[in-house]
Length: 223
Image 1 (cartoon, rainbow, N blue to C red):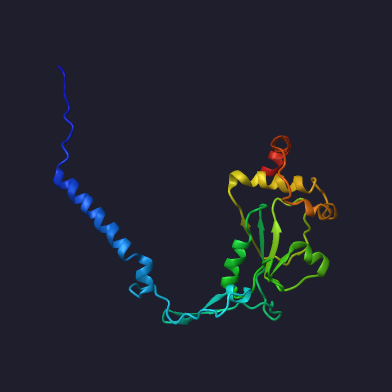
Image 2: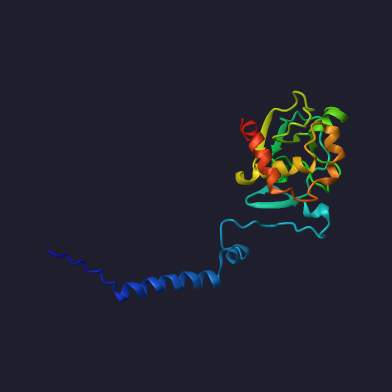
């Protein structure tokens, strides 16, 4: 006995209605997109009375939002100086090489209103770990470090209260870490690493070197 299954017939009116619905949605978004609606004040998420900095210098680009209430806000520059009369909960920000710890600093800057670490800042609120050892303890709320970091210095003593680990793409973490070590000629002390710092990101190590290092160190790095 042979059973023949008939393919369900697709009714033309249903197809027409589906295509018409898609067309209307796309047309509406093209003619009146959400961004346009927001800028025109047609949503509940409109920010009113926003102050736009008059210039495009560095100080104006780095801005924080001051909540004025009732949905209003004003852009305000962050405080470049670290207060000495505030008992901060110190946060150690650690990350793999190329972990983009600046992303964490931006979030902390927004939460605290204190100028965070950047190559352009003169008074950063984020202090490198070795600065505590060579320049003494301070009230910096953010402490910059790396992990794994066998060549680092535990310079902050017992100052740190909590740790934020910034991890990039897991598949690239070990490779990036090896590349940094390779650039520094696998230095084992801060002095040796400092002498080789000009080699950072200057060239790409051979893939064979990474495989050899990986097979030798992978279990230690995992644990």
